[in-house]
Length: 502
Image (cartoon, rainbow, N blue to C red; front, side, top):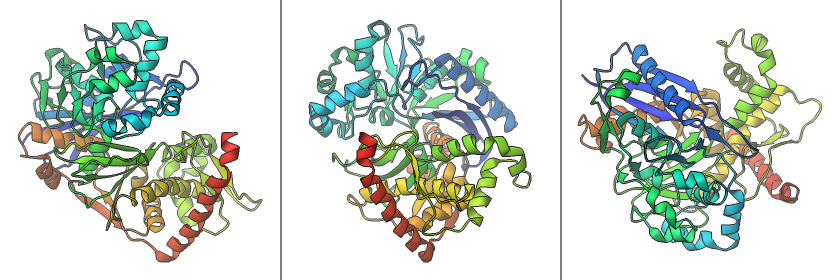
């Protein structure tokens, strides 16, 4: 029996997992990403270090699974969307990669929006404009780093760069490209009109050939085999945008499913046969299953807020707090929240440390603090505030589709039974947790399984490789209290707008 490898190029970690044809994970490995911030609002990544980390996690995942590269039948990669990876004619990085949280091009986007360009391109792009999309970053490079723009030969996304390093083949996978505002999303083609309207017509030379998620896009080169422990000649699929990978790993193959990804970004998504193009929707992109489109509402208002709280306010007390909780602060946080009752006057947390979903640049804050409140009350407020940010997105999606019978939850929050139950209570919908810890890598492995012929289609592979691990049923009483508190949260966001935008 052959095995598969899924690689996940995340914004905070690079991961690899060895997965069998039934979707079971046999071995994993992770390397944290070093984010470079050479200037305020810039976020970059060393592309050579990224390649070295990828080689390391593949070797380590193989070792954890007690397998050699000869046992692997196929590979695929997923990764975060947008940002900018540029290589020259010899395949070398032109400069550091730019991450999807970068804000250097924010003024360019504001100028486009003031001119009404966002409305004019929407029928083609089907998505909002924002600063870390490659259209804006290319316009910035053209203006402020013309030497980098001139040296560049190809534009890639994170996972496409890793596929290039593994196979030597330059290609852009369709789902990732469809989220960049450089594609005619309804047609699935490049469109010269977009480049002209963004003022970057010369960028046409940078756009690689488009490939599908489950299409073989090259094989592992001898040099890459030596670096990773893989077998030279192992086929590699196109892979996909990470939101697509989480969709597949959650069993999303029809319009009935609604998937939440509660990670650094709080993403909320569903798929349909027809693309939804509406200025009130954050993004429509092409889904990895041919003939389907993915509609998404999301913002960086998710579990990254809890990571910050744990790091900044609990880190110094880790030894004391974790003596009875398996050695992790997150286990202590879960137990603490579970034992802390929710009251009407529990503080409210606005989870805007890294961005907002209010349509303006809001900041994070705690509201309603009293002298008798404790660290545990604040921790519970952080858990709840991140869910309330999802709730704003969910209510927007409900203007376009009917509420689902269940919601499938993935990301860091899904690992916490306490947090997952809070999602069920807030939304008053059963929350299903897909099996597996590295769902991005599983989604990539599903594409690899189709590309190398283990399954005939992505739908068949999803049926054979995914399952639900547990379900959380909503509590109506807690739901009523959360609804009352969400109304206060929503009103606070409205009333604080003049303060945030002053």
